[in-house]
View 1: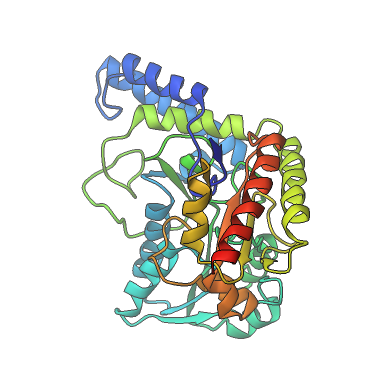
View 2 (view 1 turned 90 degrees about the vertical axis):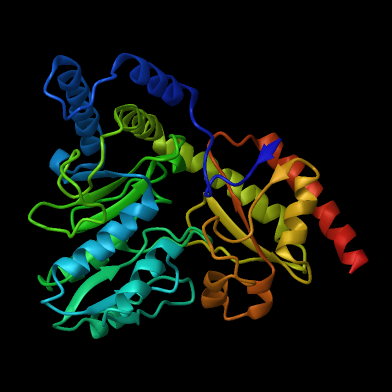
Length: 375
């Protein structure tokens, strides 16, 4: 099997799974219980939280555990807007966000919130001058992803955060799902940030929301304190401990892994970019872990299933997309419906082998030739 869909999810690391199993067996107490078993579980959560905070250079009190990035995004966007709606009802975002950003924003529009989409350049990078022009006295939230999940566009999060420091009534949220564990990022000027363990070889069902101090939220889930007052529910001790383990492992040799994946990315681009009916949509401003391309005249689903028959696994749009017939992100970048209707995503990892890429390229070209003749 050749797996090239790491942006959708990663297989769990054996060490991470081992941590989950050991903690599940050895820490049965509810962390909010006052007896010895509860205290032991609470101490383990606190130690895990400190490890995560140290890696991301934030405070332990600024970490909220969730079920994943989608919940984190919903908690951040709804929580901020409902908490501070007396300040204004204006939101700014981009055309390159995940569906779990558009979902809560669309809901807030039914409550009277107004949304503007900031312009981006030919590479999909946010136009900072346009962002400044959109900012108003009643702008309450700017939500811009660090890395687009479908194409891999890397946005200038640090620069955006610096601009927004001049707007104290406006909060800055960023979805970090596709960058955490792949590239270092400075969160000094980010107010809220979402991420999920299963994107860096952790278990599904656990994610995080960084919420800086002195910021309040209306909780998405009410019902008492968990690890914080902002998300109720019995703390998942084993998931939290394994979350910390996965993050620690992701940051070991992070630069070395980045360089290796860049090499793999270049192999794919060089192998496929010479064909006239294959268009590389990702550009040199994109994270190398994600490579989006279009095979002109062939439906993405047809390519996906043809590769699946060869035991090779890629994706069309982002795994959480609504199933639309074309990629909105690719269309926003290229302004081409033809490319948007035929786009596929190849996502790489440091565990991907060069030999796997060579086999993939060989199979891919043969399938394209076969399907092109058939069409």
